[in-house]
Length: 74
Image (cartoon, rainbow, N blue to C red; front, top):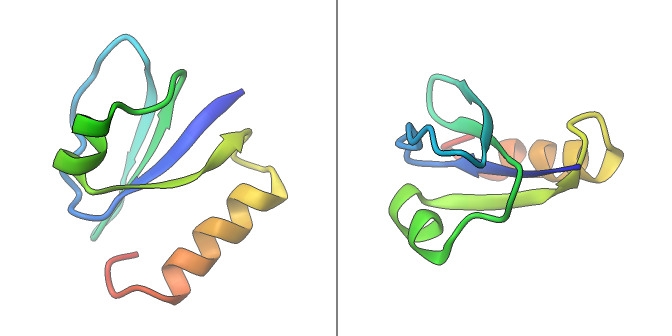
């Protein structure tokens, strides 16, 4: 299981030991971590939590779609 976040300022480029993948989009990044992001990472990279699980899980997809639909950044 992974922790999924969206970086709305598209600045999450850290490749630490808990980073599984980063999908760079035009206006945001989808970040997959093996552990929860630290408060410093959340603040510095403007991370929005999508959920814990697999990318295909309904709750993660619903949160991502909600974010894309309700934000100019996603």
